[in-house]
Amino acid sequence: MSGELIVGFLVWLVSVLILRGFVIKFGEKIGGTDKGKDRKVDGKVMGRVGGVGILLGVVGGLFTGGVENEKLRGITIGGMIIIVVGI
Image (cartoon, rainbow, N blue to C red; front, side, top):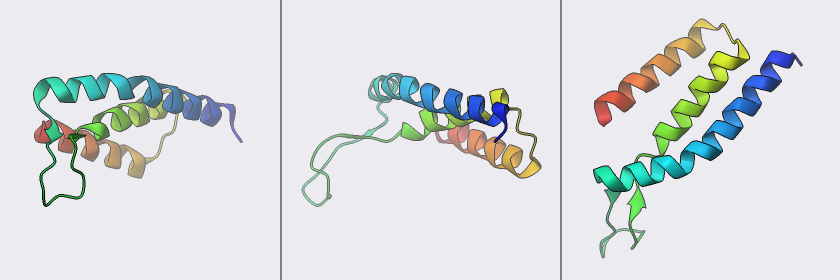
């Protein structure tokens, strides 16, 4: 395995673990939560912006890992557009 891929994976892993807490707090501040009701499976408040932290971690891992793949770049840009439009 290439050393760049290992570094990219480690950056992805650490950044997702660190960003998770910040994204949870951010979601609570902007109202990005789903309040549980009687008919829903979860009766408690659940976050709905968890994908932001995962996307930021993936982008960080791709940049530091040096992955040059047209399909991955397209998927990442599409994910960023979906996140921006969704927020």
